[in-house]
Structure formats: structure tokens, C-alpha cells
Length: 449
Image (cartoon, rainbow, N blue to C red; front, top):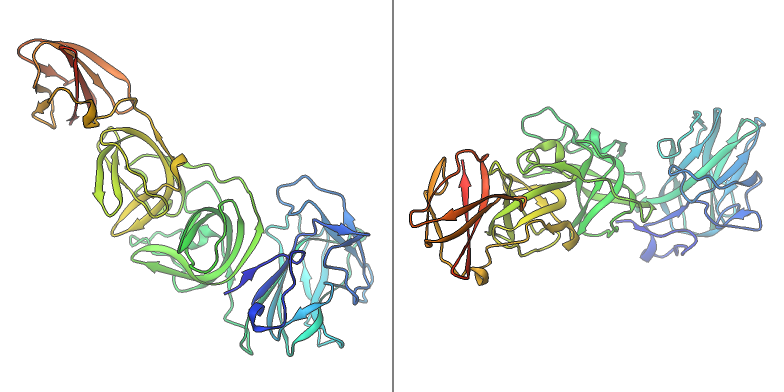
């Protein structure tokens, strides 16, 4: 597995301990006109700091701008650092308003063989325009420099937003090709099974981490359907709000689409705003297109506070039930209490579930509950569920209040010795009935269907 550090934080040693480290920079820091960790001894190109750009598409706020309008190449390299033997990938996120040629090489006291030039197309958004190529370092070096060799820029030059250098592993040949795919590409399917069309494929994708637990995390790259996915990864530990790039294998785990066997994880940025949760219902959420997405169900009521295996069930007014699970956070709800619940949509044991991440994801919405410490009156409703009329037993004189799942008072009723109540005009759903009699209070619920 790859471990992530920034170039300014540490440089990896040529020992086995850090042989799989990623070198990464976003050119946020400059000293004496040079980007920290770059413009090394083999550099002969002119590099300049482009003024800070207030754009969410620009990492670190600055570009390293390199101009070489000639057909002879100029070099831009990292400051010499210890490098282990192995296969490396160099990725460059860039701006350019015209085409140019770029290739890579490695210097360890002598130059290796340059890769062939690649034609870079004009690019205005670096997050979607990436140069990527691989090379082999045949032996360890104490002051190795990775070379970006470029030619034929225009007067504006090449603006480099970020660079990431990844050691792909210890084999003598690079691993199988990882194909860049969006989360939508991985998730979207018309198959009734819900399985990814890219199952068993090696992919590279990016997203914002929306939730984590001990053996994985969820990432998302949009706020519409099919843009979230679960990543099974018990080695890397990104944080919520990190923008990450990962390489791994698409797999189906009992019909849960996931990415596993994570070979590479690059932290692009941290502290990003999370996607707005999708507003769904306890019935609409059970759909393949929302798997892995951050979602919220509102004005639901807890109809089973202990459904087993750490789960509890909520339902909307139509009595569509949704399990709330404890994959990321365990919560003890109150029976018949109303809630708004935010979480990640997960699929396991044949059903979709909502996975809240912490206590902030669970908000009580009804001021009363049926906690037994408040039940001074032993009430019952017959029949229950009810279609039109029910009998309220356990009380004679007094007042009854019918409250809906959103905590709103629907009706107040004066009770007599024969307590039959007509609810035929109510919409289907779960209701709480509160009874006050002889300075005592009781609660019970009924289901209108």
C-alpha cells in the first residue's frame, strides 16, 4: 500500500520502510522565487510563480509557470532526494492555453533515457486535465531528480497546478493499467442486479470523503444520483472532507458496489465542504442510484428502537420502513420518537440502510416520546392498525390529542365513558395519541392505513 506525505513535510528514504511513498506538491509555498522542493539542480527552464488565483479548481492557490517557446527541450525537476529502485508514475495537473510537448526522465548523476514526448492539449481546468506517464528507476539514488522536459509552449507557457509522484511497487514491470473513471461511470447501470458494468476492472477515480470507519470510507464527486461509492480499505485513513485520488479494483460484495485492493491513494486537498445531502424518503432511498451517496430523511418516526444487529427502523407517514445502521456510529433511539436522519446509503444483507456518521446526523423532531417513565396511564388502541374507527381503552373522562409524525397537533378530543374515535379523514401513517385524565398522562401510538 502507498502512504501519502507531502514533499515539504518529508522526503522518503531509499530503504524498504518508505519504498512506496508518494511525493506530492501543489506549489503553495515558494522561497526566493522557487517552489519549495522543486526547481532542482537539473532545472534549466525559467519558472515563475503565477499570482494567486481565487478558484476552487486551483489547488494551493498558485501555479508554477514554465515557458519554453523553442523546439529544444527545457527541464524542470524536483530538488534531489533519496529514491528507491522501482517503477514510478508521474502525474501533472496543468493549465495551458495552447498545445505543447511534455516527456519525463530521471537523473541520478547521469541521465536515463527520456520517454517519448506526449502532446498536451489546451486545458483550462487542471482537475480534469492530467498528464500521466511511468518510468523505471533501475537503482537507488541518494539525490535523484524526476525530470519534466517540455518544449513548444506559447508565450504564456505551461501552468503546473500540482504534481504527484507515486512508486507503483517493487516489481520490475509496471502493474496492469488503471483506467481513469468517474464514480458515475463505475456506479451507473441499467442491470436489474445493480452490479457495476466495470466489475473486476482496475480504475482510478477521485472524490470527496464523506464518511469513514475502521475498514473503509465513502467518497462522492457530485450531488446527483450515481455519484457516491464505498471504498473498502483497511490500510489508508483519509479524513472526512479530504479530496482524494485512488486506484483500485471495482468489486461487488453481496451486491454492494465498492472499490477495493487500493494500490494508491493521493490526498489532493483537505477540509473541503461536503456535498449537500440528497433529500430522500424512507421509500425512495432504497434505490441503486443512491448507493454510496450522502442522504437525509426528514420527519420519520422510530417504529422499532432495537431491530437487531445495532439497527433501528424508521418510517414515514406511509409506513415505508428504513433501517438505520451502526456501521459508522451507534445510536440508541427512543421508540416512536420523530427524527431527521442524515447518513450514507449502504447495502448489506439484502437491503438498503442509512449510516449516520455521528450524533450531529440525528436530530429529534418530536418533543414527546413514549418513554415509559412518562406513561402514568396504561392505554391501548383497538384495532391497531385502524382504517376508520378505533376504541381507546384504559381511560374514561379526559382529553386526547392526536399528534402526527412531524410533532404537529392534529386534533383534540374530549373523552367520555365510551371512547370510540373516528380517524377516517386522516392520511395513512403513524400517529401518537396523548391522553390527559385525573392529573395523569399516557401515550400510545396507532397506525392509520
